[in-house]
Amino acid sequence: MREESSDRGSRGVALESRLGQAYGEEAFLYFLAMERKRSERSGSPFLLLLVDLKEEPGASVRIAPAMSARIFSRLWLALRETDVVGWYREERVAGAVLTQLPAGPMADVCGEVSQRVTAGLREGLPPDTARRLQVRVYQLGPRVYQLGPRLKG
Image (tube, rainbow, N blue to C red):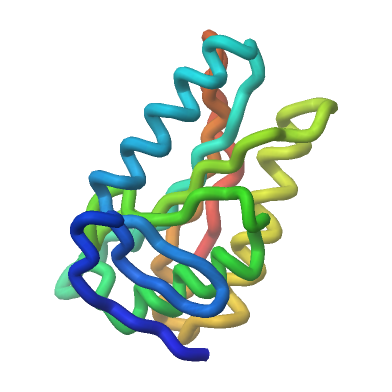
């Protein structure tokens, strides 16, 4: 897989590969704000998925560029092309905005997304890194906030 990291300031792309684009923090937060507005108008919820590293003594919570490329690649494989992937907090928290959710119980959707992403990340990352990952799924929308399951070490 060919991945390129560069300063693409005008487009807000932090990482690009044949699988997709990961947006920088500013662009990602813009897409998140737009989805919140769309959700308010439509009354439909959406999901915010966040991935970061647990704090451990002597270990950085910063996600190194090589590791972020692997995390974003695994997210692109686990999510749909229409989902937005990028930095929620630059080099610290990777995120995804999942739009156009299927009808049905949202608790099931949060759990399914969390399980699929967790499994994909564990497959593609070194065990010591996978052990430190935290995957959180929030259901957002008009008056709806729900936390999905976390990746357990």
